Amino acid sequence: MSTLEQKKFPIGQFEKPNYICDIELDKYMKVIKIFPERLKDLIEDFTDDQLDTPYREGGWTVRQLINHIADSHINSFIRFKLALTEDNPTIKPYDEAKWAELQDSISMPVKPAMRMIKGTHQRWHVLLKTLTNKQFERTFHHPENNQDYDLRYYLAFYAWHCHHHFAHIENLKKEKGW
Image (cartoon, rainbow, N blue to C red; front, side, top):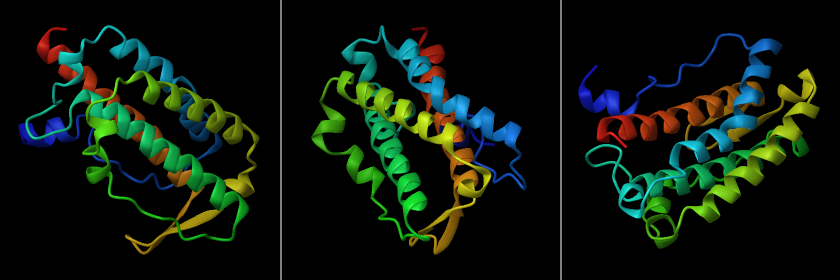
C-alpha cells in the first residue's frame, strides 16, 4: 500500500462482513456509544492552527473532518430511522466533498459539531439498543450504488467510519508530535 493510500485509509478500506452475529452488533453499538467521548479526548487541546491542519496532503483539515463526521452521522441516523419506518426507502445521497467546502465546515469552531456528534450518537445508541434482529434486517435503497443495505451492514460500516476518521486525526497528531 502506498503512503498516500495508507494516509487515506489508515485502518484499511471497509470490508463487508459475510455475517454479523449479535456479538459483533454489540461491539458496533459500543463504538457508536463511546465515539464522541473518544473524539473529544483526542482533539480537546487542539489549537485553531492544529484544527486547520490537513490530515494528509490534499486532504481535509481536522476541522473539516469533525464537521464531516457530524454531517455524515446525522445522515446515517436519519437513514436508520427511514429504514425502520418505511419499506426499503430510497435515501437522498449528498456530496460530502462539497459539504466539507462550505463555510460552516471550514471556518466555524468545532464545538457545535462536537455537540451534534454527541447528541446524535446518544440518540443513535438508544435506538440501536432497542432494535430486534428482525429490525436490523430492514433496508434502505442507495440510488448512487443502486443497492439495498440492511441495518446490520450499515451499522458495521459506521463503526468502521468512526475508527477510520479517528485514525486520520490520531495519526496526524502522532506525526506532528502534538
